[in-house]
Length: 366
Image 1 (tube, one colour):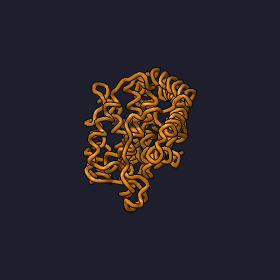
Image 2 (cartoon, rainbow, N blue to C red; image 1 turned 90 degrees about the vertical axis):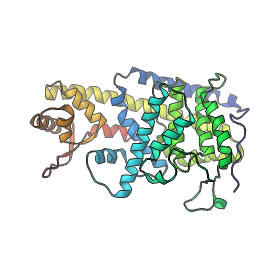
Image 3 (cartoon, helix red, strand yellow; image 1 turned 180 degrees about the vertical axis):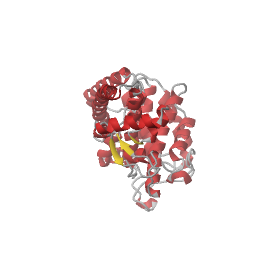
Image 4 (tube, rainbow, N blue to C red; image 1 turned 30 degrees about the horizontal axis):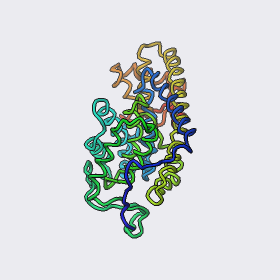
């Protein structure tokens, strides 16, 4: 198979007239979701579990099988087999990449330097660490069944010699605030073109998916890069790859845009309901914990439960900086009331492993 020779980007004559209604619906859904995000008093706490779930689902598309629950368990000191630990690190790297890029984009435009930095964070200490983290490829790569030759590949990206011009054109498009093209359409093009260029030896899919909410935030469509669409992409993986593949094989940009808009509508509506349920849970537990503990420490415990929904009992006294005896009393009260569940009892000097199950009942529906 020959390397893909990209057509001029952005593509001409997209025939968007046929999807005007879908574009309008996508904008309306995104606007409603963004309005909810803007209303959050403590978004860092409330959105933390959804970000971890997004990291899990985006990594799963690439074959990672660890879960967000297992990530929290490892952070609480649980031991896993090396392969599982590698998967967990990939999920953590995804989360860290999004957070670092969000901070950078508050002051700087999207740049090739930023994309390389994102890739370096994403690949740190994981299986792709030997595939030039933070550096664009200088060899030909291809996509296909594991171990296949380039002749049997399903897609061969442009050769390395073409990357510089393609990436410079790509960054120019990202930072061009031409109002003639709806930002949501631009986001679809931003993701697809990155996947077509495939500029890294590994990690292209995850970086491309990270760029979607980051671009929408930078264009002012979202107050934060908290639109997590990997749930839809993972659930519709075959259609995802087929839609991208038809761009290179048939020049079918419109088909890809239609798929992307449907993904955005689905996930904006899904995320809206998830965030509302998380807000309701937070408010309900705030009242319950306050009544149970009769302490001003209740709100700090609640925030800890959202940030670390699987934790060791000793985390309470360490984070709240209170006496062990009082922390143990709080844990007993919350456990007896069903607010937290004991996954493992204390053993010797090893504290009990506890879980905030009500949160998992919400996030695992994503």
